[in-house]
Image (cartoon, rainbow, N blue to C red; front, side, top):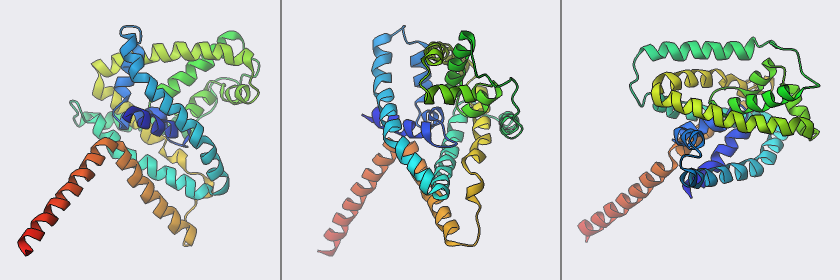
Length: 288
């Protein structure tokens, strides 16, 4: 049940500006398990499917439920919504950092994080199409589209829009979905499956052998995409909208931080309630 609920949270991350589902998998402690399950899918098929099914089901539910809500909020309350998302993103930073430091972290990895963040910022702000825009793709280019989508979805901190734009595939990606162009979507789907299996296998190996280095690079890339959450509509000033936006940001941070360890935090709340009840009983005994 917890994996289903976490899947819903991951689904929200999949549609929220500046936040990816793979990042939330890291925060929720499920990324390594998910990558391992996909990368070794056929080694223990029954066990891996039993783990992945509720997660994927929750992801689908999260996307379906919240895609229209997010679209409505961005269309009608863009500034508030983007600050809410910024709060959600910032709330994941300390949790993500905790994951990075989990195994053998030392000061040299701060340099790795910094360099990765610089690379990410450069890709985002200085991005110029490395390849011409592809409008009439061949089969290979359509398959490449699926592989690129898989890679940008699986690797946390990688902005899919930047990667696809750099490869000249972003317009093709958006247009083929909007037009339901099966001549592009079918080979792209094949590329997506290939990409998911291969990239998950590679990420599983990297995490197993170079955990801290891999997550330091991922964390740096993640930090670099945070500015992408806000845009020109989010300028702050001395007005009520700005005050409300800051309050929403703080609330978003709190919600995100709480959800990062939802099971542990619920247990803490239960323990606190139990302790309070016991204290009340002790006080009652003393006063009788």
